[in-house]
Image 1 (spheres, rainbow, N blue to C red):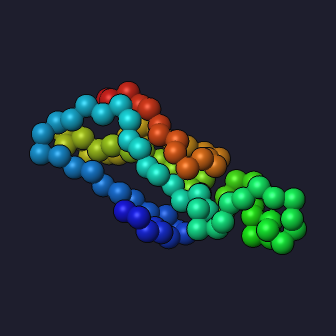
Image 2 (image 1 turned 135 degrees about the vertical axis):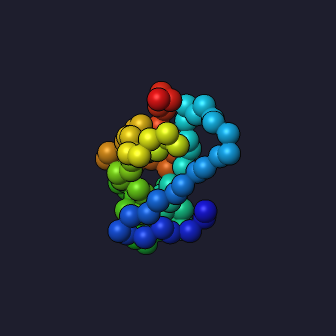
Image 3 (image 1 turned 90 degrees about the vertical axis):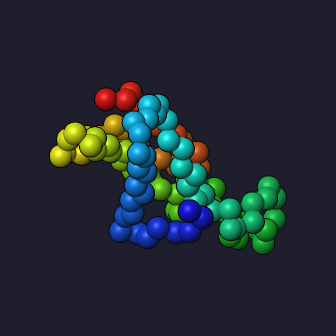
Length: 94
């Protein structure tokens, strides 16, 4: 997608005409690459550097599935406390 999805949450739907077997979905989260990253002992160079989990990075997310034969959503995986740019969950297909 390449754009911010909002602070209140967002969703992304993937749908296929034929059944699929998926073990992984990879999302790339924003991780502050808009700020310059550098290693320096200079206070001026470090003024905008955040040396901690980046505030833009999605911290909590859920991966749900709804089968065509079912009416309810089922949770496949969840990520809580995430701070990584790439952290693809692995899940068993139902």
